[in-house]
Image (cartoon, rainbow, N blue to C red; front, side):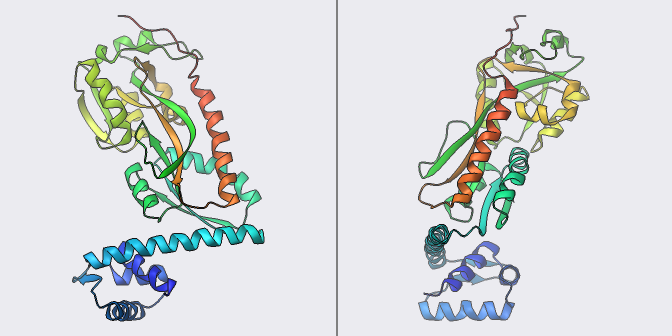
Length: 319
């Protein structure tokens, strides 16, 4: 079996287009198309339905691609083991990053990682959690930074980097801003039910963050009136700083954004919280370089978590 042929078909399936796949593989479009036609003739089945612009995978194609990915995963595992025997420090780590959190983590640990493993390349993809889980499961990513509540995949290994609260932000002119903790003190805790009449801007509904947060609104007895739902936490901070609305977002986003000082922040009664994990498939062999990256990420998480002062709850507001 030709491993290059496996890579060709997997790339066509991912690109849904021979021209785009050929560009990624650095071969000619006609050459790639010939490889596909030859393979389909050898197999006696059609792997793709040809459209004017896109290729659509057939049932036979799905079976071929799923197994091809498993074979290519075995190849990567084998090469990783042989590299360790040779004490080889070259290679690639394909890694998924969530928006904002993932970039912060990677840029914080990369300089130290690169100083020890300058021959290791990274292939980075910024994707939401659900997409990363699928890509890791399919073997198209080695690992990813995932933000999770309780739901986890049994086929994955999760290394907890840190935990953080989802906290409430309100405008400086809000009547309840006077109940906030003084600068430098642990955040005060307040119940969401006091904000039933307020307008909120929040992260988009299908996000992991909303999966953690929405039950707290339900428990408070109301569905928030929404001004905007977005994928960008910094946009939410801007909206609150301008006095347009309230929001709820991860504590780390307020520390990373200087505009957050123009808002007032509270912990929420019941303490909605999630974990930030470095995740990978349990059946994938990882190199010594990967494990060093993991150590750096865990150490980074410990420093970040100290800034949240999770073990120092402030006063509880009663109105």
